[in-house]
Image 1 (cartoon, rainbow, N blue to C red):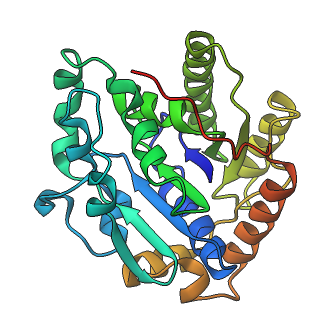
Image 2 (spheres, one colour):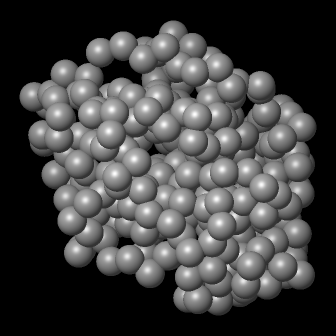
Length: 267
């Protein structure tokens, strides 16, 4: 199992689109994919036509066992996206209450790691969609993942948000005493605007060695795919956005560390 987290402490940079875009392509290639929605806003859950306000069974249930995860529970919470080999663990708005509850729970930062240990033989890839705030859910994703993807919109304010995320990443790596491979993924790139071109130049200079050489373009077909509840590669396989995500996936597979060894999870 390979575990990728998609994170940024700024919203609206393309995290959910990246999870679904890569997940759909992996499933199309025959991989068994699990997407995990760790955001109380439930964008990934909404993408596949479920209402986070009405979900009675969600990721939230995994956190209700004082840091332990019953072996049978994760499989019971998984939903199918409607597409072959593409499943997801849904979010509910109840997740917003976790920060207060987690204070009194030991091991709350390892719940996702323990959950994925229960599903280790069932999936080839796990992609996690994370909230745009530092808290127990983002910490869980960073503790569980083997590769971190940092989508960042090619505009000035998004670059400032990425700086915040990098400070968080350095703090987490120091506390976990492990290096976490990360890749900055420029998104919503519009080559027609000076602001977008200039922002991409700054990103490449600042994150040299940790940035994908290309960029995900602005593509209205992403919005159309989301409205239809379809992975972009199903909705419009010939779109330029899908071609960009296919290129990103190829890069990740060829450059990502071979981190298929199961994490040693302790309480």
